[in-house]
Image (cartoon, rainbow, N blue to C red; front, side, top):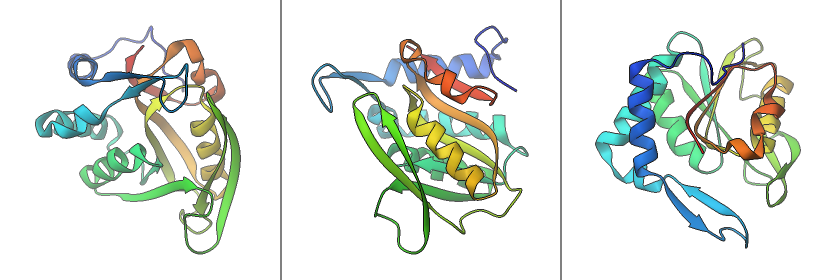
Length: 186
């Protein structure tokens, strides 16, 4: 099931989106010239706001996932908190060479370069339902690579959730056929 912007957004989701939009900040020319970085660290620094976002995401996915997968690095922060709120495990997806033990990897394209992601080969149980979670959906390369890793390890992506989606970069297209939820669109 693919979430579309025409689906009705419940009141709690709208309130959480307004809170996130208020706390996000733009950092021009980071990590390279011409890139406008959407920073959500002010949200992390605001305890009540962070709790609101975590509770909102957990409410939406309770009973739909058995593990949360978060991408390096901001996806670790939010993903671990949501996993805790749901009472499920958390699996990190990291840059190449950062995980000990046997891994499976995927190359992908960012809006500002190339990279490789890895996940432990034994991180998931075949058939396990997975929530893929990150701070920003930009070009969709990181998220698509992560979904591929989940599926390579036998997991089933139940949904992909993002704090912010940069609509102009059309990352949602790389996740076609998946349930995609973004709190804020820019």
